[in-house]
Image (cartoon, rainbow, N blue to C red; front, side):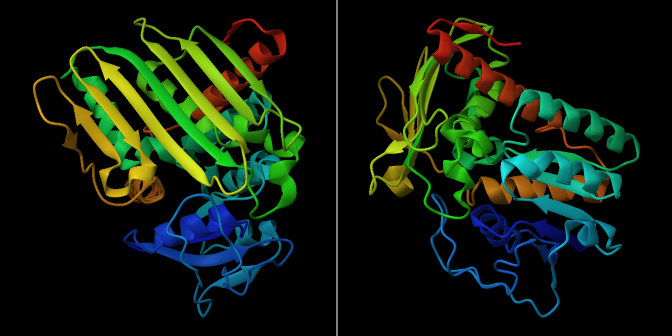
Length: 345
């Protein structure tokens, strides 16, 4: 069964989703919406970002509506799913309006600019779920093959408990799409827009930290553009994450992790290409792991559309998860400001 989808926002994240939808069976783009009119001709050749294949994308608009008013999209009876890829400050109001119109909603991360705003969306999502209408925050790293593989390995206990885990997501300042990225009051800087991916994955693997001790600074947005955080988690593992938009021009983007188990070490670095994921076990040669095809965008969109088809609320990532990740980021900001560990509330 085809599912008609309307995308609100036509920047880099919209392109990432559009490319992924072409690989998701049953996904049909029925409408694009952007109040500015930007890219509503389906030509995204001027849009680039920090991940993806880098190929120019053009959408055949023959059977796709081009709209400027989100309310018109939400009122369209054909649309079943609304995919929100707009600037962060608009997420909550757009998502609530779409839910109230009976549309299933995928909302890009961070799903709100503050935990308080996120809680508004948590309440709206819970009410909508009672009517069989679902919302999911687009936390794609939970679906990224290497990270999915790591989560399974942690849960299996095959190599014993985790002793330490380090996550890294660093980049030069974003130069694509809207200028809002470099307005920290709107985007939240690298702390909230980029680093939140690893925060969410740490929550996914280790649960809610008791506290966090973070150091960081602002460079390009006026908000926190570089952060290094150490989390106090149940079980005693040493867990840390680094996130940045502070790298010099030309650096590009890198994401990586290293996890030390009692009886193995796992290392992932996207810069190694086909050899990105490796496992080291004492007494054995280093092993290159091929965790699966595709990326986290394909995984999250496939999962969400399956939930819609089966009329089953998403559980791999929920609105509560989206709010929890924002709460941890706010604790990191408090720790940076105060120079001491901050509790996670």
